[in-house]
Image (cartoon, rainbow, N blue to C red; front, side, top):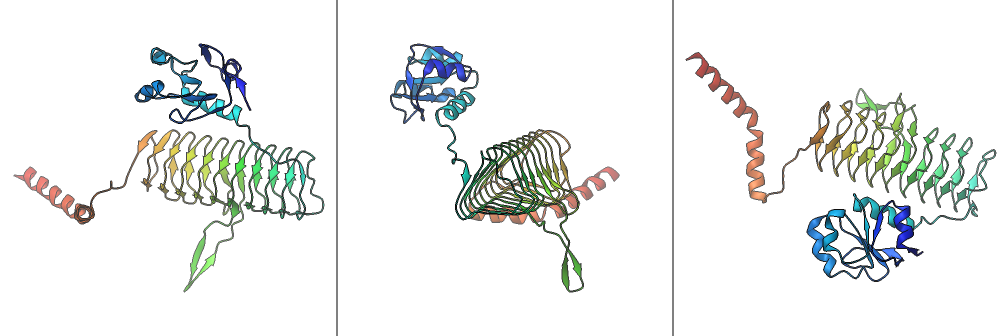
Length: 338
């Protein structure tokens, strides 16, 4: 696909400065060639303007003096670049229809606009929206509802009674609605707690490859509109995640925890069960959250990388902090009594 730079400027709400040209695609500023569009989002990369072969640049107004190429002027060049990338690289979708080998329960209606891939299993009571795409090998259990324009990539499993909104994307290996992890000790063994809740997923939600969202035990697990979940993320039973929160790879949220709106959760973050996190909280990578967070802001934990010998010494000191705290308090008390 190619488009005139002037047309692209109009579509992504930028101002064109310089000559019009034909843009075929986007590229990194270091690797761009003629016919490609690059961007500058940080002034430390302005020196690349002298060496790039890109035909045009997306750039901020205040940096134009350094740019001798046709430019699209944007307050947020990165956002404008994303919009341009989406326009020049439209999503590839399968043609509508039901592939050979798909097993669809009697009474389930597949809209004419939908696609169902090979070896898909769709059980009874499922409702599919318009323009849904279900990739090869998916299993859609009974009484699931899937909204319009939702794309489910190959080998995704969706448990019974799950409700999925419009314009969602689930990547391969996702499991929605498996039983939550609930057991009660009964003598020398553990008795499984029935997980009788469901999963409710809003509109415009994306869930990355091999991530899991467990069904609720009593209440539903709820994923709000616009939530983006990376690969290899575990969401426990009864968890509620507010709108437009982002969770990065290898993070885990334990059962019955509530996370607010517009939170940013870094990679390998661990969030314990039965706590609440307010809106607009940022958790940096490897943070361990053991109690509720009642104020917006950025939170961190964990030890920075160090040589093994230093790390071992500091780990031993950390174990002695409680003893040291008691000694300091005793010294303070003795000083006050003198």
